[in-house]
Image (cartoon, rainbow over all chains, first blue to last red; front, side, top):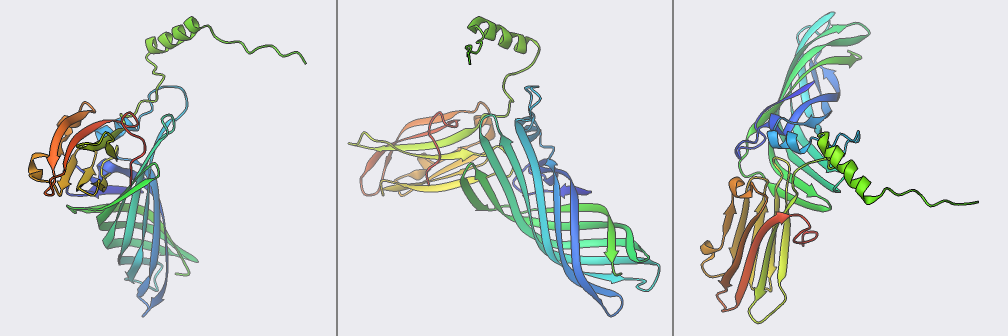
Length: 191
Length: 146
């Protein structure tokens, strides 16, 4: 599960959790081990969830006509990709604690769709993942399985707003740090 | 095959059904906010045809729409809109500080804003009447211009 923290921008009352709710993520790392304890590779992560706790956004996303049809739909998709490195403390052991660091690019898109009034708006924040810090514990058999915690600290530097077929891209004037905190289960093939 | 006309509800019955829907606390609309546009229009003295420049106001936090447009190759207007703030800047006119607008959340609370009959003049002596308006989308203009 991914949880949002920090601020999306420094432009006043623009918290990350206000824009985005928690997400269900899926991440894939592809890489190779070297010098026994080290791993280096590339990561790609995807998350899906709903819009955040901002009061006006919650009100906007509420379909209150009770007709059984969801005329107003709000959802969020996040993407992250980059390179990462891990260090294993017990690479030959059955139980292997590990730590990791990565960096790369990220984007998070919130989409608001009003089917009844034919209105669609998409706001995508683009930026850098400055530090993706992770630690976990693998229980190794034929495959390794274990829990991990990951904190991906990033910053949006551009926002693209699409309303209907019109697209507007602007630089973020007042940047701020945000984080996705992931609690999950890791499966390692060929550990 | 014999076709019978499809039955139509009498108007009074339709109204009754809608009234009953409201009485039960149900709304026939899904809700959602008012979708707004910012409009700047300008008419040059001696002309009758206004040029209009529209930009939608985003609904979501973090959404920003920004466009710049030249009016009759005389002056330029830049609109920068978010759901909480709209900034309109005029370039290429005399004393732009009198006409530039910074419309805040309080002024947008009732989903409308107007500032009409602004008389602007370019350094070259061309004069225009400019209107600024924020209001429901589609009511004032169609799709925003490039």
